[in-house]
Amino acid sequence: MSKAPRKLRARGHVLAPDIDPFDALGLRPIDEGWGRTALAVVRISAVVLWSLLCMPAQAVCLLLPGEAKVAFPRVYWRGMCFCIGLSLREVRLAGAEPTGRPVVYIANHSSWLDILVLGALLPAAFVSKGEVRSWPGIGLIARLGRTVFVERRRATTGRERDAMRERLAGGHNLILFPEGTSSDGTRVLPFRPTFFAAAARGEGVAPVVCPISLAYDRVGFLPAGRASRPLFAWYADMDLVPHAWRLLRQRGLRASVLHAPAMDPADFADRKALAAASWRVVANGAATLRQNREPAIATVVPDAADAAYA
Image 1 (spheres, rainbow, N blue to C red):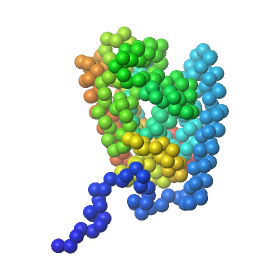
Image 2 (tube, helix red, strand yellow; image 1 turned 180 degrees about the horizontal axis):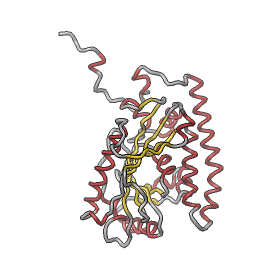
Image 3 (cartoon, helix red, strand yellow; image 1 turned 90 degrees about the horizontal axis):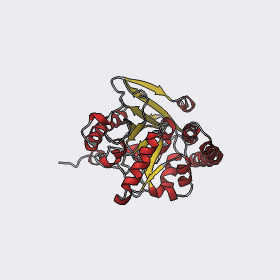
Image 4 (tube, helix red, strand yellow; image 1 turned 45 degrees about the vertical axis):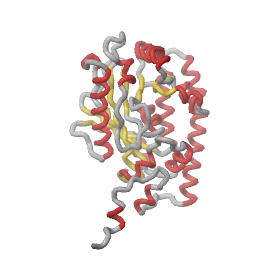
């Protein structure tokens, strides 16, 4: 019996992070050679210039009373998405409306891009690992964005939980990535119950938990498949600079965000049950977006930037 054709034998191959998905598919993006390099350089320059303009403005907002310090970061992150050529789309399930209570947004995590996307769409501050505080440039931006830093050590758990509760008690919202790390974009890792400590029942604060599913579903203006996910996903020991460089050389990028109805922690026996239930919602939503399917009952809210990249 003759051997199976090469394409069939390689069908189950999973791309390594350093393989260009367009090469694997036999396709090439619109911009070739120097044109793609020039596009990346222009985008990097725009990111740096936009950040330098916005950081002093946010510093002033932090000194002013009111909600300017909450609203301006959304302007900054939306501008960042525009600078790198990433358009945004929101999909809201029926019942996914504001509740008037503080919100803990919980989302799947596969890339540094998640910060830009969720920061642009959600009126909330991030909860991040403590080491980000010392990253050059990024740490300063995180501090200006009122990020809550956590060390994930048993000795500091109580203090960090109290810091999150204090933020929620003040009427502000938080964004958590309960997986505890980034994934390869093909699945949602199990949620860790410890991330739900600030939202647990009987803790003196009455926030709600809003599940958010995120997927990168367009590249080159075409639906993104499994082969192109390494272009977006940043995980394990991947280096940030080469990953960002490859991404910034592409056109027609889009991220879709699915908002599910809020979940009341009081409806669950403990935070372990809350973590499991919210994981199912987020994982199912992310799978729907990855498969380029629309939820059965939803309202699609296209971003104005979509028109700019059409």
